[in-house]
Length: 313
Image (cartoon, rainbow, N blue to C red):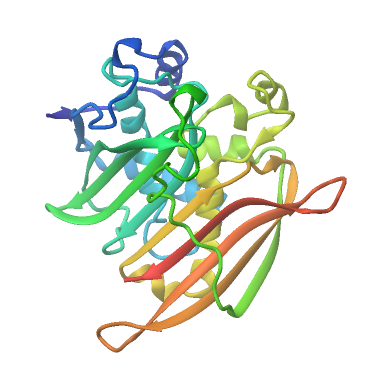
């Protein structure tokens, strides 16, 4: 069932409702056959949704220099739709403690900020996981009825009673690979300032307390504020755009797996390597594998935050 949405609620109201949402025990244990069939169709009433100020703020905080919209901008703009779906009574899980563990974006063509986009968000898959249950929310963005962009966000609901062994868990959706025969490996060091979470919140609308201050993060079990996972992905794609801008002016698929949170403040290292493989059209298409890591304060060991890949289609 498709429900048309004329406007989006404020993030404050969504977070308040999310804090009150509890597990729907009438839906337990989940059957894994289907999630709620309701989907949301949102057509912004005006292009203020993509106002120059909003777009530029997002591009600044993610260091984007491309001509078109950052590929992740459409994800953060669709995030309220994801929250609305999860707040449905039929959705079985509480929202507090959900962990975004994987994100996939496919760009079929680049999108300009002045184009009239239509968003369609819906549940996609649910399966057992070694730590509980994973489920996915998909979003399709169309311009003049043509599919231009799509995403799949996979979230983990932790519950030992619903979990499965490593051998039986279905992890097909977590496909980000980090091993390849590297050609032209590049590395960059970035400093993530203490205020990064607040800057990204103003740009994205995601004011989750775990990202804002050390004090608010401690209320949810973190010693420090942590960087938004989608900021990390966005920043990595911005770095790739500076290396190979032509890739972002065509169709591509990019996936990332979020591993451990990056603390604020901290120093992190971005790494990228590239493979070239021959396609069926006998052209060379690049597969770029990238990661974001940091060094442990006490032992100096590498801490993985994100691993991903980008493939030109």
